[in-house]
Amino acid sequence: MEDKEMLGAETVMEEKEMPGAQAAAEEQVTADAQTAAEENEATAAETAAEEKEASGAETAADAKEEAAEAPAGQPDAGDRPEKAAEQAESMDDYASELEASFRQINEGDILTGTVIGVSETEVTVDLGYYTDGIIRLEDASDDPTFSLKDSIKVGDTLSATVIRKDDGRGHILLSMKAAAAVLAWDRLKELLDSQENITVKISGITRGGAIAYLEGTRGFIPASKLALNFVEEDDLPNWLNKSIEVRVITADPEEKRLVMSARDILREKAAEERRSRISNVEVGLVTEGTVETIKPYGAFVDLGNGLSGLLHISQISQQRIKHPSAVLKEGQKVKVKIIENKDGKLSLSMKALEDVAAEAIEEETFELPTSEAVTTSLGSLFAKLKL
Image 1 (cartoon, rainbow, N blue to C red):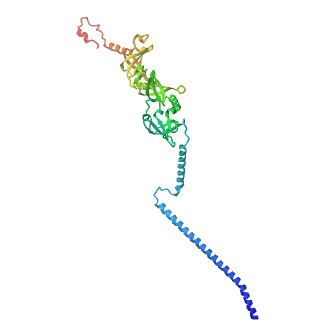
Image 2 (image 1 turned 60 degrees about the horizontal axis):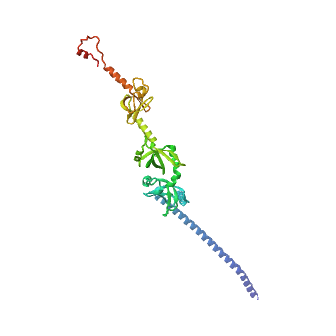
Image 3 (image 1 turned 120 degrees about the horizontal axis):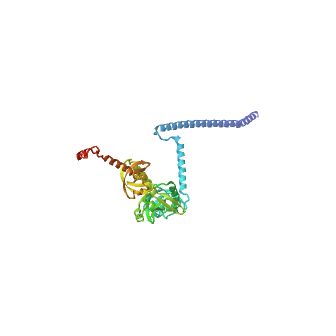
């Protein structure tokens, strides 16, 4: 009985102890597994760090070698922000140009562009638009002698009015004539104010003058202003197709009246040439001239070569006269002496030549001897003559 009880007690005790030991064993296994996991993680982390460090060192070394091997002037990474800025700027420019190329264009707008092509019949203009502009010969000028090739060159800047947004070939049809009707008068007013010299070609002859086009506008040059002197009706056809320098003397947009003159320019040039020639004339020179006009105070004498001088009434004769016409008449040939050259004007004298002639005559006179007898021989008489 006692043995059985003891055996039963031991059995009970063992059964009680077994769950506790088992639990302890399981806990130990779990702790060991966790420790092993932590060690593995630490080892993995350490390995990764070492690999990363090694990789970074290799990359730095490679970069250093590449920088050493790179040719001079090659941009490095530090230039990248500048490149990015440049690219952004160019993209902005492109965007603005692209936007401009698709701007709204309407008939009647005046556009300005650069000539990129010229033929006998039309001009091609770059408008900075998605398509080019075309100016036909008939839309360029009213001047019948106007030539596109002679008047317009590649690279010129032109302004023209849109008359059709599509000419049937995908181009914008433009008119210089229509634009000129708006812009030309502003330019003509500027020329009137500045008195700038402009070269025009005479394209037509009409009663009382000639026709020439300026800024695409028909202008008139009176016969009295074509040359220094009035151009007679019969001589007007000789001026056709001549190119001359003119100035605008009338520009009236309301009346559409444009008048030009060449005479003022010719007068200025003639005066300058005259001053140049006069500056070379020496005082004391004796020459021959023709009486042009007679005035109460004297006469103007044409000396030739575009030169003339004043023969004052006091320098016409030794004798006092009331009017130059008492001695002179227009067209008369006279010999004069230049006695003054001042401020581009020549003063002449006939009287000075009379004085010279009188002095010469006086030098050639002689006196008969008074102390000699009447019987003096002819030979002795000639021997005492003053020559």
